Image (cartoon, rainbow, N blue to C red; front, side, top):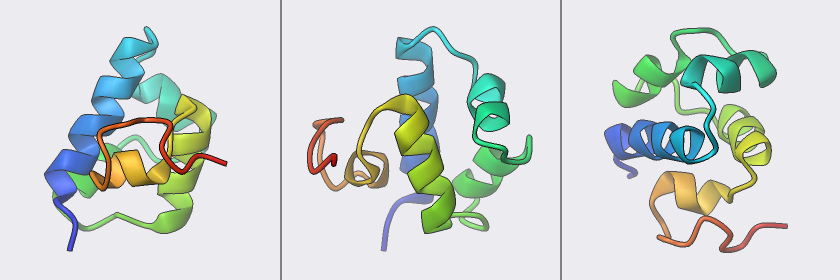
Length: 76
């Protein structure tokens, strides 16, 4: 099982590193404004949403899931 709080934190960190707000990321990915808080609570950790966010932030889903500390690991 993945740490849902860590997923949310990694999304926030990647957005901040790219000078983007979390809201900007969510709007660009056509996701609801509460998606990150739902992810942190473990109620909205869907692979399609993670893939959209990873694509937008140019990082791997594995990184967002905490499976690697390299944002570009296993990125296609």
